[in-house]
Length: 111
Length: 113
Image (cartoon, rainbow over all chains, first blue to last red; front, top):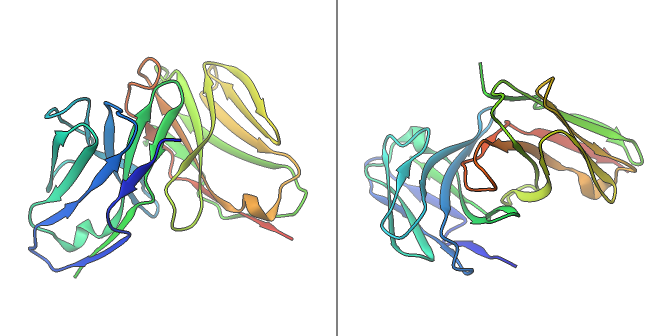
């Protein structure tokens, strides 16, 4: 089975800090995604990547950037964390003809 | 108007009941439809995947797509307490699974013993 691992389950950061959320998949998939999940709003796409060093903006990219230096690793960066970025962050890897496999999520609190 | 609408619930049913979960959508270009199940403090896991209109059955789960009405459903027969979770519908325009997914906001289901 595909495994998508997010490095932290819970994070607490201060306003203005630079935050790195790491995601690693173990099946050599080309496509990886970052979503955030908020009550009443569901999952919203932040950024996605179809290949190494390639990235595309999703629906809510403002305040975020990403890095894909290696195929297995897709990092989400909050350049200057703000309280409205408190959320559950979910990384997903695409398994063709099967669907997305999600990590367990990182619950980020910005204080 | 959101592209995908899903009643957030919560929905509470007794064990053994038939559960019906639904989503409506506005974009007629959607072709691939999925249902994900998300347990508390976990990431979503794919439950059902269908292409175009029709029904698909997998054990106690049946996914139904009506493209003419822009309406999809997930039925759970003989519901169990272990089915208690949030159920998310998702859909995509792209061929296969290359397109980004658009999600409903999820319906929280509780099955009481």
